[in-house]
Length: 313
Image (cartoon, rainbow, N blue to C red; front, side, top):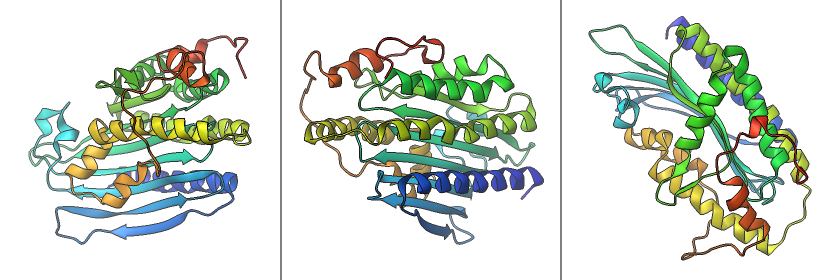
């Protein structure tokens, strides 16, 4: 490994541990640790650490995974924007997390930070970064959406004030279910193939995004986890979780990369919610909190700059 690779690996492992420690404190139940290593000489080499919680007090299912792999050929999902690198060996590492709470008033959240290095035989290595975080509420609260986006903006502003609006728009466009014509949630920030300013500047930006996850999400958890809920709210949560499954299996580049490159299936599919429902042509009743999710939240809004409204709860 190069000095640069070692620095990224050390940061990512430290980030994983800091996030897991904060989540364990919030839930009260420890995460399972499952370390793994690929045998040398196979299609994919490398190692990783899966950290998982199931049936916790707060989280019904969630995981925070680290992986560091090397492969002989970049899969199609990693070269769709860089066709000149098709066929090159690669190295990839990252931390990816998804949390599915029991309480429908606590949103599902996803975060990923990663580094890729293509290693063409006749040229210097090409390194880029990707990642971001996004929030998927079942019941919308403007206060939560504003807090999440403002925390993302504050993390990116020191690296250039143009980054947040650019990455926010990218997130809105990326986490969009084209076959449903609706967003997956209220977005956040997303970036990929990022190498602006060279390695040091791009890595510093990545660290800011990773470090912002806990302050972006846990205050929302603390605010909503005590809300009472019943069968109606759980039923709606299970229905909306179906959108999460559809996106991950049809569109998500990280899931496709893992499956196409021969990655570890248990770790890749850790992001799936434990209980999901589908219904034929279901529509929420007008005027209900479920309908308000669609009309007021599942559309692009400038959350970071909106003033609090009378519904700011």
